[in-house]
Length: 87
Image (cartoon, rainbow, N blue to C red; front, side, top):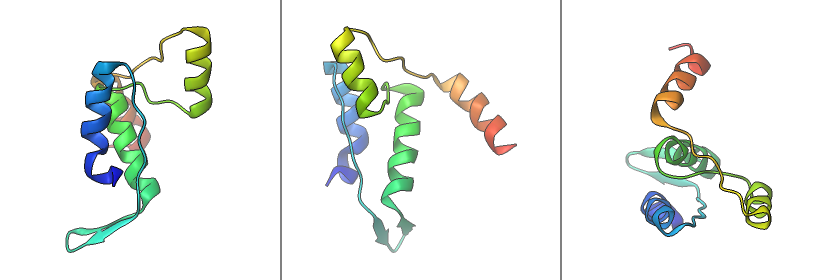
């Protein structure tokens, strides 16, 4: 299940020059989360610090063109998050 190792896989894979992840719906005593929300949340977190998150098309283009996908950074992500949520 990728949910159990999404972060570890992507963070570790980033050091090796590659990453890909996915998610499934979860529900347990702690709560519930849809696969879409889980995936979006984890990808947002990863892009803020550890990985360049992109669509398959963007990744294919980068590989074909020999270009590097740009990562986000924590400060920019915090400022954008504050602006997006009004908090």
